[in-house]
Length: 217
Ligand SMILES: O=P(O)(O)OC[C@H]1O[C@H](OP(=O)(O)OP(=O)(O)O)[C@H](O)[C@@H]1O
Ligand SMILES: O=c1cc[nH]c(=O)[nH]1
Ligand SMILES: [Mg+2]
Image (cartoon, rainbow, N blue to C red):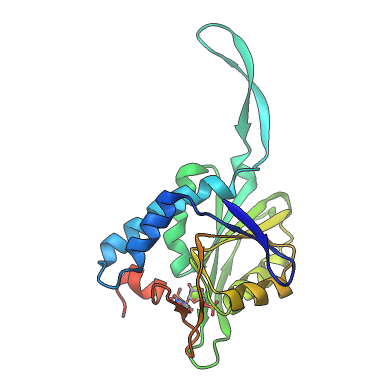
């Protein structure tokens, strides 16, 4: 994993593991089936979960091995909340839950107005006790950054203990915008692509993640 700072001084971690990069290449291919696209996203999410949870807090418990008693670490999974940005963020959820099965899950419904590219909220549901939880926001695409910035702004109203944002692909313009709004929130992504096109799509990109996941084009 390589780490850098964006212009706004926020941190970006690029998960450059060969397995992630290989699967991302397959996902970008325009003839990839919906089924295969969804499966690959699930596989990548599990691999990215390892990186995003690398510094997760643990506590020691006493266990008995077949030979003796020892103190050994366990993660505080119940203190994590995965926040799915619908729709496409749901593709990241199952893999993350495989790795942190005790986590809670919140949902934010946002769609990007195709003309103005402004994020419009239609749903918001979080667990209680957010102030005791570390939030990991899931959305595969960070394009203009409007959706990511809006999701995190809304999430901050619930005062989670910490926030990090996981995407699959990010555009440089979107990262800059996001970190100007939220310099305190690190971003984990598998790749930073060249730029946005005139419709606000990431290029080279992979197209519309939600449509490709659900076959709704
Ligand atoms: O950085 P932005 O310019 O805001 O674009 C990124 C957003 O666009 C996609 O969602 P979309 O609005 O297409 O909704 P969907 O997930 O329901 O398809 C994607 O999942 C992000 O939420
Ligand atoms: O390239 C993009 C931009 C926004 N949303 C997507 O799904 N893809
Ligand atoms: Mg969205």
